[in-house]
Image 1: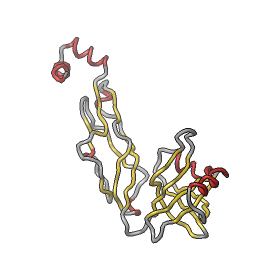
Image 2: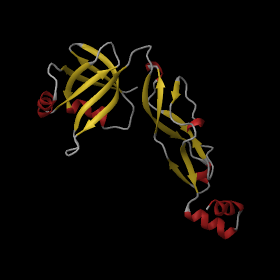
Image 3: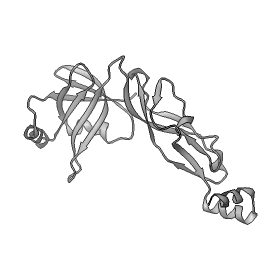
Image 4: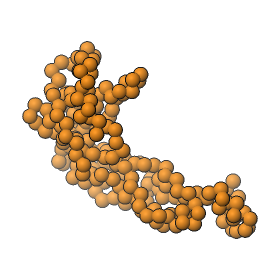
Length: 201
């Protein structure tokens, strides 16, 4: 799994004034939760960019005062006016302690519904999971090959090893819908599929 290395510095002063001072020097304050103790630190805004501005799930190795913490991104805060990063929350990965993480979905295959002229609609791009650090993955693969016209793949259809999916099982992840052109062709031909589609309306 891709790992971002961040060189951090221990925060000795706290409060809004201290945080403003940190940000004025192009640094971002952060907190590491989940381990033996809470670590308040700061690092350069530039160091956080590869971790924050991406759709990938990545690990962060943050070194503070000579000690390295393996973490995942937990939460972010942005300035409402300038849209700049102002705070980062990280969750430390501890061997036997399960964590909650958001893992991106990776869709593979070409669905039979798309081959038949339908349009693939992706409804969810990631899933929330609970897992031990060793079982976390960069993505969850979803094979859409057998997804037919008017069909859905739901959360309950996704099978993953070592991870408990926390999303509601009946939520659709992806579906294939009839395109306007295909609807017109079927209506002209008077096919049962067109009749079915008309019934749904």
